[in-house]
Structure formats: C-alpha cells, structure tokens
Length: 367
Image 1 (tube, one colour):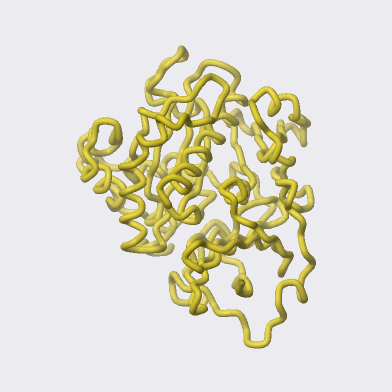
Image 2 (image 1 turned 60 degrees about the vertical axis):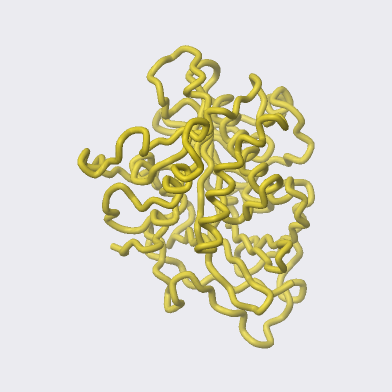
C-alpha cells in the first residue's frame, strides 16, 4: 500500500513552499528500509468519523459524523462554547468559528473519502495524522492533517512508486486563527476582466466548451505570489482572481444537502471539463463552493453550504469518476451574496466550482 513520504521542513509562515529542495510537483520517496507505517507509528482509529487530535487552536478535531441523517440532528449534536471572546461551535464533522464578525468553517478532510466508500487507513507519523486510501487505478492517496484537523499536504503515489504533491498547505506555525489566513488584494483591473458571462459562467446555459474554457482559464490578473490552501479558502480577494462556474440547476430542499438523482446528471458538463483538465495535468485542483441566501441563521447557513458543497463533490466522483483527491470543498453560507438582498433568493442558493491550481503556486512565482 506504500509508505507515506515524510513531510519536508515547514515553509515560511503564510507562503506555500516552493519545494524545499524537491522538484515542484514531486514528493520525496520514502527512505530505503524505512519501517512500515504500522511499525513506526501508532495506528489511529478514525472509524467513527472523528479526526483524532488534541483540542489545539480553533479547530481541534471534529465530532463523529457517520450517523448524521438530517439537519435537525446536526443542530441537536452541536456543542457551543466561548474561547477568549471567540464563539466556537462544534458539530458532526465540522467546527464553526465567529471571529471579528465573520464566520469560518472547517471540516473533517477525510469524511468525503469515507462517504465514497474508500477504506481510509489513518496512521500517526511525524506529528501528523496520515490518512491513505487506494484508488481504482492502483495509485494511493496520502492526506496529512495536523492536530487541529487542518489539511497540511496531499500526495498521490503511483504503482511504480513515483509521487506527485497535489496540495501543500504548510506553515512555520500551526496555532493559527482563521483571520490569519485572510489576504487582501486590490480588485483586478477592469480591463483584465473577461465579460461578466465569461467570468462567472452558469453551467445550465453554457455549452460544454465554454464550461471547459472557464475551468482551465488562467488567473484574470497577475498573482503577486503563491498562496496556501487556507488562504485561498478564506480570502475572497484571492478567489476572485479565477473564473468560476455556477451550478444554478442544482437545487436543494430546505435544510437538506442531498442532491436528487434527477439533478445529479446536470453535473455532467462540469465533470467532463474537470476530468479532461486532470487528464492533461494530474495536479489540477478544483474547489467546490457552497453558498446560501441571507434568510435563516448564519451558523445554519454556513453548515448547510459546506455540506452541500461536499455532497456535489461526492457526486462528481461517484457518478462521473472525477478523482476525489483533485477536489476540495468549502462552504461560505450567506457571506458572499451574488444578489444583494436579505430576502429569499434562488440565485444566492448555489454551488460553484473554480480552478485554484494557479493560486496554489502552479506557474506562480513565490514572494
């Protein structure tokens, strides 16, 4: 099943590493004669869906999520407390934080893989929880998370032993607040922006060729440096440098994150575009984003949006064979309204997909 490669030394704070002596996009091979994971590290039992880790920082692990059936149960299982004026809510598979009047959510990075039926094995190695599973093509995926549950690194190992780094999210220090990862950038110059219908494309109206062009397009403006996954997740100014595709044809029942079978087929053009891009470059990473309108409770909306994004990502993998490891998900609730209204809005209840590979450093220069 392969031995997980040890993570290289930490990167300078706030900047994703350029490789630390390792060629970009490739991970170091495990040292010859290195003990098997079961010999060198303690087995971590994640079968209950909870990340194992100390309650450090704001995340600190997640409540078990395997038995969650509906949103009423999510509410019933919530644990709320206050840490030095910061409101923290833990619920099955997720932690929500309110800080400086902003809401942030983090989730169990391995929950989606377990939901897809992968046998996720978790070992403790070098201060990380290393979750791994086998892909149908014979490759093996390793996902490193720290004691806070933050995704640190994701690596694909091929049957011939070669390895490719998909995500590198390392920092010098890990006791970070969510606000530490918010990066402000000036808006792209208007002259650099494509027409509105080519900047945010609606998959329900756009032909597959337009969807593909949107999901492989470069940044709309130069990037001053590369960014970590956490910075991309929590910084709207960074994400705005990439075009996106709205999935307006996917609708959810109130309080539900389930996509009905008749709607799942509407993801075909998105799946086709991502699969084509990943075949061209196996390191491509796409973010599936969830949004709600402004009605209801902000905490509920953030949780629902995150679960809906994960549900769509799971369908892309289960129904259309999009490699699950090339996707990340994130919910934003009601914080970034497409239509500025506090009332009900179908346009605001949406899921979107965007390419984030250049933001993570593929082709971008470091600062």
